Amino acid sequence: MAQLDGDEEKQRFQVELEFLQCLSNPWYLNHLAQQQYFKDPAFLRYLDYLQYWKQPEYAKFVVYPHALHFLDMLQHEQFREYISTSENTQELHRMQYYHWMFLRNPPEKPDSSPDQSNPSPAAATAPVATLGGHTHAQPPVASNSQQYKNGF
Image 1 (cartoon, one colour):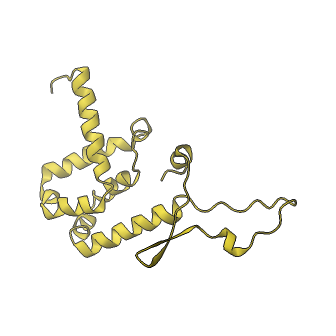
Image 2 (cartoon, one colour):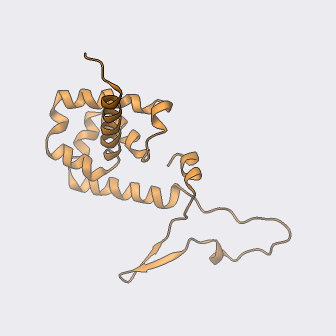
Image 3 (cartoon, one colour):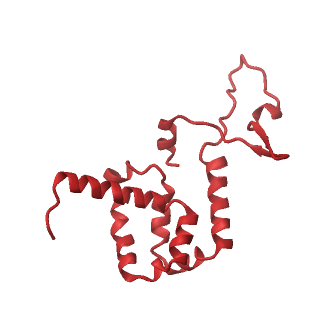
């Protein structure tokens, strides 16, 4: 295998990182399944090769950690078959959405210092927005440092 110069290495790094992060999108995984990529042994070897992104020195560049989880899941034929149907993809997308909304940044517990009065239960709930006549809870916003500390 030929040695890559600095620019080629940088470009390869960027391309592989961009592709890896695309794996965080269940609908992209569904598209790959529909296009029969998961039946191609060379593509499956490429997915296995990308496992190096889980090493800390590379993982720190990954903005969408779900990509690493899905990369692991794609190593299993059962998951590759599962993601090939739109119903399963929709369910996976829904679970991912609710993870981001509720589990990624759980609401902070009220400070229980003696100088504060007890907040009402309504004050402890997440802000709510109305869209098209439906009520949707708004996820708490966290700083970037908190996002990376929590891992999601």
